[in-house]
Image 1 (cartoon, chains in turn red, orange):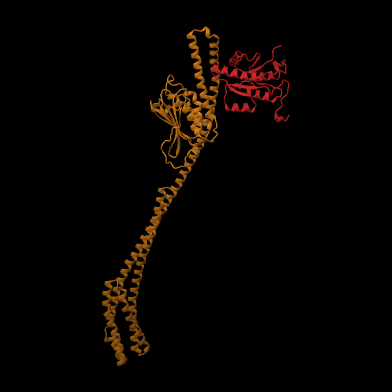
Image 2 (cartoon, each protein chain N blue to C red; image 1 turned 90 degrees about the vertical axis):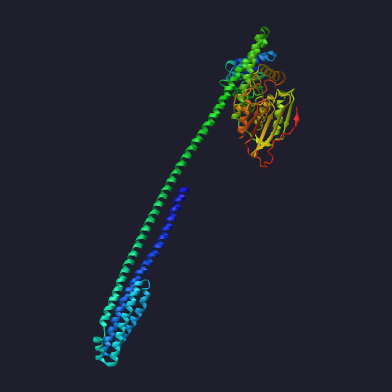
Length: 157
Length: 476
């Protein structure tokens, strides 16, 4: 049985995925990274469906790195699905994308994204951005105990 | 109503008035002519009366002589009185005609002799009786001779008057005819003018309707074109955005893999290999800036302005703070005047100041003492902000290209840049409804001026100060 996935990287570009993974690894930040190339696959992974139906349902990643421009199911839809389900609601989601459109930023925050970063063109800046995101969410941030359902205030728990 | 149409109306009015005046004048002349005709008839009648009255006197005289009755004497006396009255009136009636006056002078003694003769007959009858009287009437006087002469004289005078009557009737008829012609001509002319006027009005109305229709059509076309254009603009902006966006990913990969190459295989490359790798990274970085600027430009094009009352001075201060790394270690003298408050989008206006001041910092790089001024001035009621530097300036010949996208007036070797900064500035200013322009001289620095078209920017104060206000505030 494979080790528990620590980071779910939702990224349709293999180059971006490779460069992101490389930056994380060089900083010894994640032993187990799962890459999915579109939104539908991401949801299959999170909710243990399709090719991920054998995954242990209670094991959720510590961080989701989400690109917005994705085939099939867009990044925003993935984000909405994660926030709509109380099992996945507490998972930190960081948008890492090319777009810095104000509209995307607004929508991302409306849907409850934890952080929003634009991928810098410059290699060193890119590596630094990925490092800082990984450092914070993997090492500094504290998550609620696994298996605890998190209800939103709106649902009046 | 047009000028020509007014002139036509005035013409018609004048003609109608003239015809009225002419008719009046003509009518009064006609009246005179008719009076003369009446007068002539009166004279003729009076002459006739003279003959009748003399005959009446004769009849009375003879009756008296034959009968001795007073009734005939009265008839005689009435006739005589009537004749005298007639003869008294005649000169007045013929005062206008010298020839008739002469005729009356000749008629007068004839009538007088005849009357004297008649009186003599009466006297003889009263004095000597019927036979003597009858004798006096039949043999003693020249009654027939006198009456013949009187009749001849009156006949002559009547002939004269008849001639006069003919002339006067002719004159009256002629003036009536003339008047008719004048009225007919005048009225025809007036009607013609009114017809022309009516036609002109009709024509003008048609023209106006046509022009209105054309205008409406042009307006609709313009509306359609505007809608099409704004749609095209939005499409273009979206296109620019997605192109720039999609270009960014492969660029990041080029930069990323050359970075990986440097990190992992750098030690195995020689100096030339490392230089080429560095070049690849530099080019990718440069292109990254271009793409980012292009994205920014298209973003501004699509962005809706959110207006707020803003102190422009605070935006300048923030921009200078943000630019600090760009002039670190240099001597820059900032002369920042107090600026007005304007209704504008603060985020975008800060970008305007950032771009303009960044340019000022860049192009004063070679000055030992860089002076950058920000101030305000007025141009016709409009408040103008200016940013001035004592940098390298530019040739005004190329000023047209200044605000174009990717247009640069300096070599990249001398001054780096993408040629988008001023295009962004211009786009923001235009979105605010303002104008931007520049003044410069090669080697002498440049000044950029802009206005904000918003209502608040139109000063309500008197344009008393036309001088630029730029005061020394800080040096760095």
